[in-house]
Amino acid sequence: MANKVLSVVVPTYNMEAYLPRCLDSVTREDVPDTLEVIVVNDGSKDRSLEIAKEYQVKRPDIIQIIDKPNGHYGSCINAALKAATGKYFRPLDADDWFDTESLVQMISRLETTNADMLITPFKVFTKDEIFTIKSEHLIPNQVHTDLQTLNAKDMRFFAMHGITYKTDVLKQSDYRQTEGICYTDMEYVLYPQDHVKSFECFNEALYMYDMNREGQSMDPYVFQKGALQFYKIFKRYLENRSSIPKHFFTKLLDFLHPFYFQIIFSKTKENDLYLNKIDKELIRINKEITKNLDKRLFHLLTLWRSTKIHPWILESMKKSLTHR
Image (cartoon, rainbow, N blue to C red):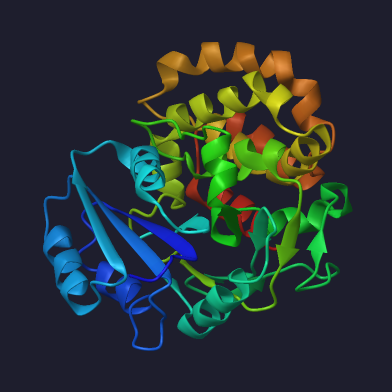
């Protein structure tokens, strides 16, 4: 079997309706066997495991399967990272997919580069439009050694969808994601940065991010239910910020704090009992997070906090954040 250049983990829980689209994009005939796709079946109760096995028969040189009890997203990343043999590593959610042409080009490029982190543009599919997130000023196919060259706008592609790490960077840093809760993909963005000494940008959009699925984690109503889980992730960021490069953490917070606020300020029956605890924590960190908060978003949040949550506020915030 060929030496693997790229290991891709596909966390899968009850994704039978979407998994074929995802796996079709990484198993086409022209995809080289230097790709390793690790499908982690996270205790699915539908045909997800059966579908993964069908694709393993189709491309046994590419597809690996890990079948395990449900442990949420982070547990899938952790399991795959232990098994990964590729030079580079990245996730691909089962309800999303890769642009296959871009994948083939990227695998070829990964054979020659030695950067610790690769940044690729990605496309976002909403009900109303399709748009591409990419850097406007970083020179592609050139290794950069100073993360401070990144600006606030560049933070848009600092999401799981746009980042690929050298596997050794993750393993040597003993990287692990929090298990048992959702919204841990942002840990993948932040925590390895202290070990990233170089990065490179590609021109081609690799990741196709589908925001149209009902029940998708970015859905406003799912946001509300996941407020406490997201709060745990956010609190861990603050507690561990000493291990994250200061300039990187500050720029990322500057871009993402409206997103954090819309999660933490959710008012629902499920988390009303915990609001006092959350409010006390927010008072402590309020100055740091709000110093550059967009005024229009702050107005929406004030209205939101003084009443009950309204879906149109969430939608407005999400749209504003997306096109910022």
